[in-house]
Length: 413
Image 1 (cartoon, one colour):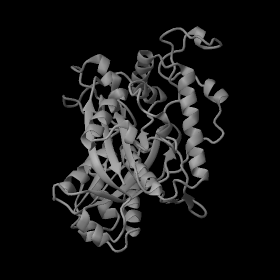
Image 2 (image 1 turned 180 degrees about the horizontal axis):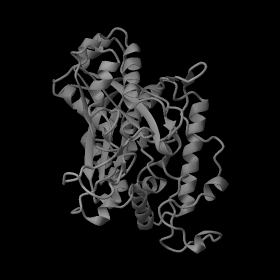
Image 3 (image 1 turned 90 degrees about the horizontal axis):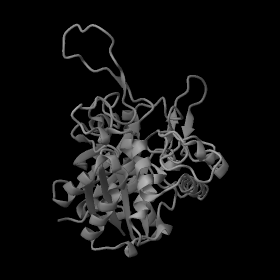
Image 4 (image 1 turned 90 degrees about the vertical axis):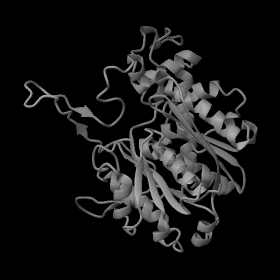
């Protein structure tokens, strides 16, 4: 098996739902990251790219089914460069990195691109077709922005609950109260704001020029959802989003068991964005002429009951570490996607030996945002850049995936 290197990684700033990137199509976002990524490696002939793997969870709208191939063409790469879109829901961007790395490791490619994209703002509504011609009565539209749709009636009902209710179940299981979730969310915003002020995202960000109907186009260059002014009082004032709070939950430090704890403040926001990575083997590195950020050491996937999907990274990380011959003590950074504070805290409860000081040092998705198909690629790129700044070390990128899966990627430098 060949060594696989992450040579470079870029991402757009992440826009909030109906925010700065609302007018930009997902295929254009993906093309932008590919174009900018290759511009940073001018010695690489784009025709040497064996394949382009891109994650996307929707595919029902402007992604036009295979957004990877659309982005290749829109980015101006030779028509001989193929592209494939992969879908492992929230893990799609990381799955794209895993598949690209695997192709290089087995010799099917020397240079490949991987990434992910999602515009949750521009996700369309879908109207299912009737199984009868000319049906009478009304038809129902389904939003494709997030969560279950067109569910098979044979599916176990407890598996198809809203994602936020799954987070509530994890909070119940591990006794994670509202205050702890809010504290974690507040920490995410503070760390992300500090990282912004110190320029720690600069190496990975590629600004997006957003046209305006009138006047000069806007250059969007900063993650939009980070709140430097976030406060515990503001967090505490938000109402639960998925379960009603008991009467005691308001104005009492001891809410009744089962009262809602997951709010808009301690969950990741709906978001838009894209990310892309350049991967290569030793021969590819020579053609690119650059020192890599990191090397892919191991990957792992896991699955659990869908109603506890947020805990799936526990097994994925354990498996990935075992494959890499590493333990938590060997890690310098662990980036765990913050779908919900309760989900992250639930994973930490099952990793008693883990040093939480190295968790998401630059903040996470609660502050930065979670554009579903892009987040896994963003996490991989963020870990690679952090290892490059350190000069050496080991890191993991991991995330939970709706319907009960986890994915983990071990990188070293």
